[in-house]
Each structure stands twice: as structure tokens, then as C-alpha cells.
Length: 119
Image (cartoon, rainbow, N blue to C red; front, top):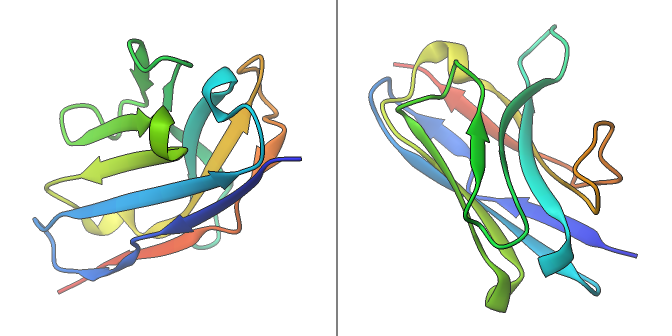
């Protein structure tokens, strides 16, 4: 059983940056496709970015292209999301998720970390 724990959220001004981290406990982190989703207040959960098992293939939602970078360190069982030039529309609860096949719905989910972009 894989458990995922996110950290790194907070309050930031527009144009600022945050780096989210997700530590996985349990076996076989390097066999999972990993992704970030987010849920803005009052809205549905939405896809942000994904990364394959060895980190050489990434995919982004249009909302984050050019501003967000997903990465992973399999030696540390850790997933990252670097977010630059943040906008108020990026305000959301951000979830780390993983799945062996990388097919939604992903099997494992963290509890989320809150990101608030506000002046």
C-alpha cells in the first residue's frame, strides 16, 4: 500500500513561486506514473501535470504550460511540482497521485496541500 504526503503549499503573491513536494511511503514508487491534480474552491478536481516512471516524459494541462514543472526523484521516493509566475486562478488544493498504469482514476491519492495566490 502506497501512502502519499504532500507539502510545500502556502500563501503567495501573484507572480510568486512555490515548490510542492510529495513523499511516497511504501514499495515500488519508481513503477508508478505520478501526477498532480488540483481542486479550486467550489470547482471540480482537475489535472495539472503527470510524469512517467523514469521521469523522461511529462505532460501538462494548458493552464500550467510554461509555468509549472513536474519532476521526480526515485531515489528519494519524492515527486515535485515547481510553480512559477503564480496567478490567483492557481488557488486550489493540490493533490499528489500515483498509479501503476497511469490511467485515471489514479489509485493512490494524498490528502492535499493548499495553495493560495493573493495580494
